[in-house]
Length: 507
Image (tube, rainbow, N blue to C red):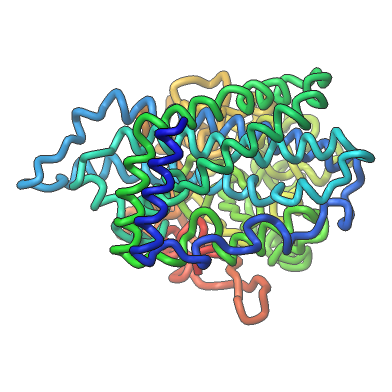
């Protein structure tokens, strides 16, 4: 430990002398002082406890996603050792890009959760000890998973200079120097100090409280908060201190004084002020606009959905993170299935369930849902498959059969036991016996698994010139000047897939 402290002191002095360690790297509002306490908002203690537990589930899911990415990278590391004389081939870039995007996607989600609960200290621990303990656990678990899996990712690409340079390149989906921003978040002496401080606070003040709770995800968090600090500090002592010193020089050379990690003003304001009050955050799309859009829809239409303030479908890249199938109103369904009305699920024929006109895969599984709930979003795009009524009926019947199937957190298209949103669409519309043509939608290989980001369907529509498989129906876009939605054009929709998934943060 003496050697570690000396190394830190020497490296900090070197960074200070180099002029790169400035206050601008550590915004005051990172510590939550500008964020409201959860109790100053509309959430009741019961609602806040429920949301905190759900946030821990999200942290656990992102840890699983990051571990899978890092495992794949370490197994395939030899394939990506780049000959400095040749550079990175297009095929390697194509394979690595979705992996890098997926990694950042999970990392952003953890950052969102960390900042969301950065005001845990404003909760009175004497009056509400459980709530403060849960909030701290989300904050600290997010932080620890970020640094553990971030260190593992850096290990996988370390000393591969060509690959590191490529990871720094700007992209429509993330900012320039994204890899340096990641290294700054992980290889930072203040991070090492925070790990030790959080460890002490957890063991002294938080552990006695959550140790009495029986929730399985809380137990998972308890184990992480107990074990990961020691692992991270051991890494710091063995290798990360040296890397951190080199990283400080690298940061100074790039003059990166406004980092996306650990916090950026737009992200901080958004998370600190809206996540504590999710029920009051108005979506861009109004109910009147949703009703107007629904009048344009037909059974079998595909609805692409995006909400800026929901961390959903993490791990799938792109501006459009969700997709659903519009089943139609009773009159339209009866007309489509006039030869066999018995094929229509009872819930869709029941006059008391007029609201059930969408099928989508959500966290609680594949469900029938009211269109207004699906349309409670910031952006909507609708495409109509150009197929026969026979194929449309076959696709809807297949989609009906998926209702009740659990959500597929592994995004594995090889099984029907669990389903992700785009998987419901893909498998409902894929050509099979009894269909005339169906839809031909290519899958994408991500981390060794064939999958389909919803954004790819928008990209496919934009790329097809001859033999188009889809017809444009509508696009509800965002108007920044009025902070509201408006009906936009086909040409604008065709460009939407290239927008950043985090454009409301980085712009």
